[in-house]
Amino acid sequence: MVESNEYTEFDIDDILHGIDYEEEVNRRIQEEKDAELAKRLQEQEGCPLSVEDRDRLIAIETQDCELAKLLQEKEKARLRRAREKAKQKALLKKQQQQLDESSEIMVPTQEPLSNIAIAIDPTYSSRRTELQDIPYTSTALSSSLDDVPPYMPIQGQRRSNQIEKKKKSKTTESVASFFKVFK
Image 1 (cartoon, rainbow, N blue to C red):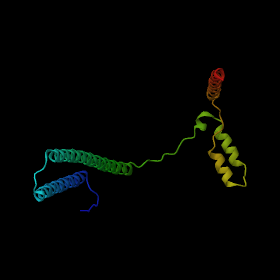
Image 2 (cartoon, helix red, strand yellow):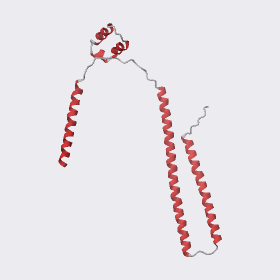
Image 3 (cartoon, rainbow, N blue to C red):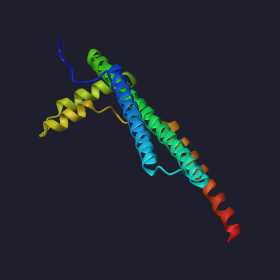
Image 4 (cartoon, helix red, strand yellow):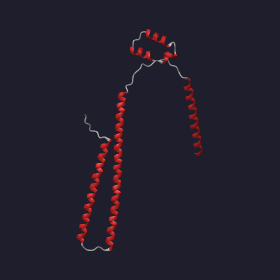
């Protein structure tokens, strides 16, 4: 069996769940320490607190609780985003591997391309043999001429290009005349 250093989606969930658990344990330990410290401070003071001091302490404790809840919610949201990001990354990696595997399986077969000029122009093959009969000084030139079909313009494209140019010029003229009104 081949060992892999990569984590699966389930491993990532386990790790993130472990992080959540550790953070929760650490948070509870810190709360207990804070509560004990508060009790010690109150015992050291020993004197009874005035109504104003008690109200102030209650307000501070309430604010601390609200702040702690807010921080916990933000941390949970951050962990949720990190978990989603890790899942997306794992899914993307898995899809990429599947794509790579499927591209390795599919080997494109190269078939020779047919020359359309031979099918369209019956005189093309005779011209080709005439060109081959003429001796050339450059072999690169002769081989490149063998592969070049004759030039045959397509009439429909020229008209459509002219129509598009007319439309563009009309729209630019109308826009220009529109802005002249405001000058």
